Image 1 (tube, rainbow, N blue to C red):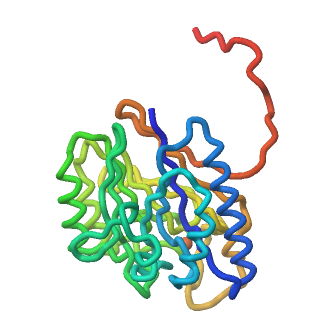
Image 2: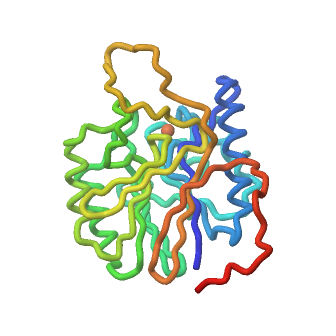
Length: 277
Ligand SMILES: [Fe+2]
């Protein structure tokens, strides 16, 4: 059995934005602490995009400093708040390889689990940049191994959360494109995403799509209609605790846990046999 932790939407920034700098760093450190205390310790961490808030070189340097104490290998994906050039300047290499088009996408094989990381960033826009070129890459990469249990990681989820201001158009062409790539793949165990700063699950192309909570602040769960042109003063982000996802792979079975990071008192100890019957 092995585990991999997914962290997402770190939004690390600099003292130019003191509130977010302090809050997002403190929350990320809390998540990293929780992951390091897990037993067994995850073999890797995947950081699934929005690593920093504005794609600035100084922010990637700040992120590097925060991650310096982490002794679990960290792989990276990019999100809509990232910019590839400064990201690669700071993190380029074996944990963030680029493909022939300069996109941050690659496959890694752990013992009994393959992770395919897909780049959905379209620089300067919030929406997903998944297109024909990336669909062809993902098809090819998934075709290369149709037996090892596999997870796909991408920043933008192709399903609706119901929080309308964060969601894609339900009939956006990229979603149909991705559904065709995912359909019929028996060794695919799920697509893990971030972006919405909340954990939710749904299906696309017959596959499980699951998002992770942010290590930074969360999106407020409000499923009522919203006028995208007229701000109505509603709360849109909330200081709910930071979280992460733990992926467990055990002889081909893959399970994801949605976890809350924090200091929690033990509640009950194991002092009498469970006595399974
Ligand atoms: Fe984000």
